[in-house]
Image (tube, rainbow, N blue to C red):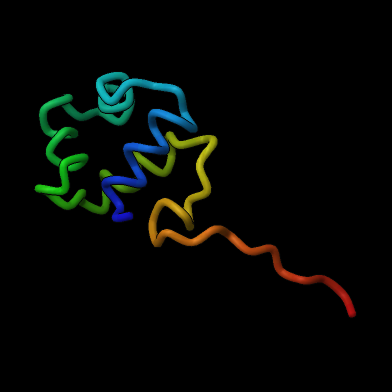
Length: 76
């Protein structure tokens, strides 16, 4: 699963929004956001920052690299 696929899943399943709603939330037109979701364009750093800021229910490590966040073991 690539970034665009994980982003689509995060928006629909974890955030319970439409792509159009989310694109407006991050300040993009739905058409430009669709290009990112299709994998035709890679998002800029500023766009990734806006996406990360607005995904409240999504593990960011999973979104960016496809891995679940692991908790560090504490103590001995």
